Amino acid sequence: MTTEVRREVIYRHSGAVRVTHWVNVVCLLVLLMSGLQIFNAHPALYFGAKSTFDDPVMAMRAMKQGEQIVGLTTVAGWNIDTTNLFGLAYAPDGDYEVRGFPWSVTLPGHRDLSTGRRWHFFFAWLFVINGLIYLIYSFVSGHLTRDLAPSGSELKHIGASIWEHLRLRFPQGEEAKRYNVLQKLAYLFVALVLLPLMLATGLAMSPGMDAGYPFLLDFFGGRQSARAIHFIAASGIVLFVVVHLVMVLISGVWNNLRSMVTGRYVIKLPEG
Amino acid sequence: MSAKPKVDRRGFLARGLAIAGASLLGGCDSELSEQPWVKRILDSAEALTRVTQRALISPTALAREYSEADISKEFKANGSTDPDDEGYKAHAANGFADWKLKVGGLVGQPLELSLPDLRAMPARTQITRHDCVEGWSCIGKWTGVPLKALLDKAGIQPSARYIVFYCADDLGQTGDDSGKYYESVGLQDAFHPQTILAYEMNGAALPIPHGAPLRLRVERQLGYKMAKYVMRIEAVDGIAGIHGGRGGFWEDLGYEWYAGI
Image 1 (cartoon, each protein chain N blue to C red):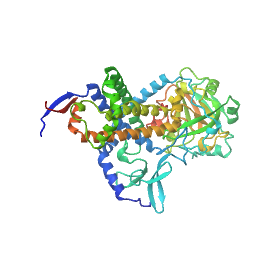
Image 2 (image 1 turned 120 degrees about the horizontal axis):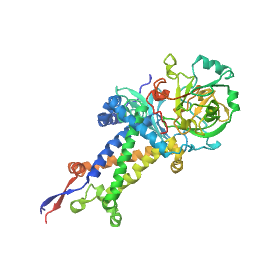
Image 3 (image 1 turned 120 degrees about the vertical axis):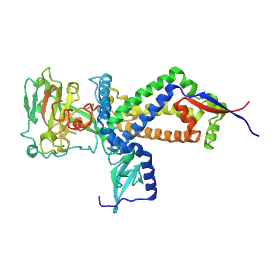
Image 4 (image 1 turned 180 degrees about the vertical axis):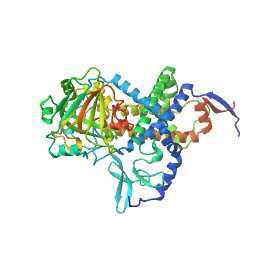
């Protein structure tokens, strides 16, 4: 039995969502790469107010192992050999250099903390302004409650949605006109938790802000904790982006891209 | 480095992937960062940050002070740790007994103060966190004379806008005095109660790696503002004419003059 399919074009993303989405893409990419440049100036993380240099929670180091130099990444007491990548990273000339993250993922590529900071703080401002525009728009226009807040019944059937995602089956027809519950929760978590957390932990690393707003230190458990949480939350955003891109690719890449550029999204509905 | 790094297949694959994925940006950014127009645009954020933080943070807000138990067992000494200057070495050799801090510039009464003179002035002790621009933090106890007390004693003139600190260490290693460390702060930070010239660290005379005989503490900014080996202080109406013109050794190399973030 064959079913006739009717194509319906819907207007999926408003102009504000599309513009802030792409500005955010640029901001997050620059913030990530310049952030790794800044991290490389002292590639180790600690919890608490201060650095305990001989006992980091996480560190990327180059160490001598017999006759060899290896790159070691230490995470909570575990040593992982990350030669070529972290600690002892590949260099642009094919050689190796002692640094946390390799040149190809930092901004600038060569070691330059002051320039990394300039990129980071400029794009941090852009990210904050863009994020505020998005949040204000989402509240005022109803985007937040209409498109992003999951309903009670959606939350009840979250198990089924996870199962369908695991089998890479995506909603079709009428169901595809709105975000599914996993999408809603993921977007809400990123927009309302992870990204604001990046800003708050970033501010908690500022000695000026710490003097004016000492609760920043209490809330995150100290400046070095804030730095570690900044790194962990950034990793969470990277993880989200990877999953997001995979989903975009396998659920109709051109349709998805078109909808985030022009706003128009094609839905296939059974005829009748 | 004579030892050979280990190369395995997994690392090689990951390396290839990383290069393929990131060379798009990584490859061209180094030149991009050098473009004058890019620098100008990026620089604009510094003024925005400074003005915003000045507006959001009360001029009298104090940096957090910690307890004795919080003091770092290992306090990292960064930058110069043993100045190579002949005059400095001579002072260090006799325990800074003949050393004198000079206070001049736009002041009513230029001063020359020995360590006992400084110790006889009002003192402040504070246990504070030192945040390096590299990302690490250490906690130490500092005792010294509030900069305000010194400036009041010298009587700064109304036209003074900045306080400049000239240091003994030649971090730039340029062969002449142009590479010598220096720093500057505005009057708000100069008169802040926690801004002190410390002669003691953790209850003992300030050690040489940490800036003996005298180092600046500006607790609401990053570590590079806290000049070590301070020899001379000057009140000035502008910093444009001093060395690189950006107000400090690291500032001349591209770091922000306002180091509150």
